[in-house]
Length: 151
Image (tube, rainbow, N blue to C red; front, top):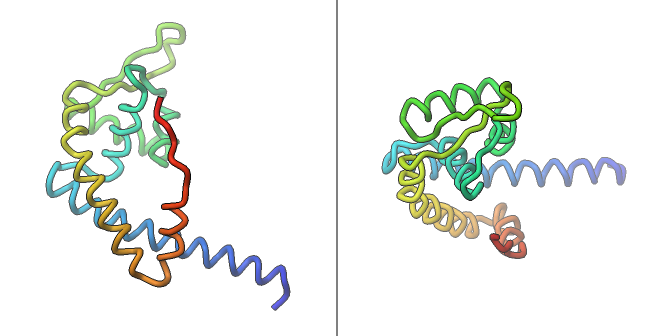
């Protein structure tokens, strides 16, 4: 194997490790959020992204990026969440073609009740992953990330 091949394999191994950790966390999170709050992980992600806007709203494209969804999948998800009364859409005053999405009071309340479950499952799953030799270095790297301050 050449040096270039080694670099490709190292990146591929890193990606497989990241995917394995992500799958472990998402599976545990999906079970807990569904069972305790009737929320999927992606629904939680959307509510969480909207809550971080501090009273503002997000364009649908921004929401799609935050949830890592296509625009059509985002529209379907927003429709479901709007039908449940968890968010609402607002037309942009400056550009009538622009649509914003905002968290409702019910969405905020559900998010606040689900956040401890999310945080607990994340902590427990990372602790479990830390005991697995193939995932432990990645968990250590996550713990070493600097804390961001929230404005």
